[in-house]
Length: 333
Image (cartoon, rainbow, N blue to C red; front, side, top):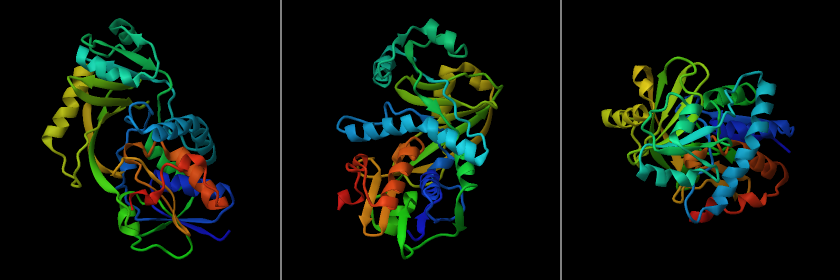
């Protein structure tokens, strides 16, 4: 096979390029070189539960399959790049502050046994004594997306510069929001604000997926003391950080873990999730020679391994895995 151009240097495009290179295919990634894509803000939660709604069984299957592939994907990438990805399999706690929150949170337990507040605080002593209940979900892991992208960048050939039209030859369009202009496909921005705090390492031991007076918040601790707090969701395309959005996230976070009030607020970052009309990704051949892998909404980090494997196999062999069948790029035509 002649070379393949991958348009987009986010986690999806880079992962596909890496997998293609491992198949012996020459790949060039075209990317603007800016950290302006959704991956830069993402917390890196690898938690397939709660990301789909009724009628999205195919997406649920894809999320679960990618979750199963993450341990091997992370191990291979860390070994080949020589870099630490921050991959952590400690597990997560889903917790609820009120009885009403508890009824909402239970759908994310995926069969895990419910825990009473004292059991949850044994696992995570920094939690407020006011929590009503929750569960430990050992299969929910995390990774640091910024480290993953840094590792992938060492392994592929990247050509800096914006692409305004598709180059000739075999092309994979993995350009996130830029996919719309390049292909005409309906990919829209969904604004999200994420905060980064810094405290003492070990303040939190697990990812916390919390429900607080009807608000959803997640807390993702890193080994160095950083804690990622997220995330808002708005159907907007601006980059404004509003006081109200910061207040909403911090209030929910501190309600769950009071000690977070003493942490340093080190970063507020807005990025935009590339979303489709049904919030499921666009995966597969758009027309001869053009393959699309975009529109991953909130699941770009989680879906990176399965997307990379399936798209690389499609490009290399022309054969589409059955997992791709529900997500054709032209389904909204």
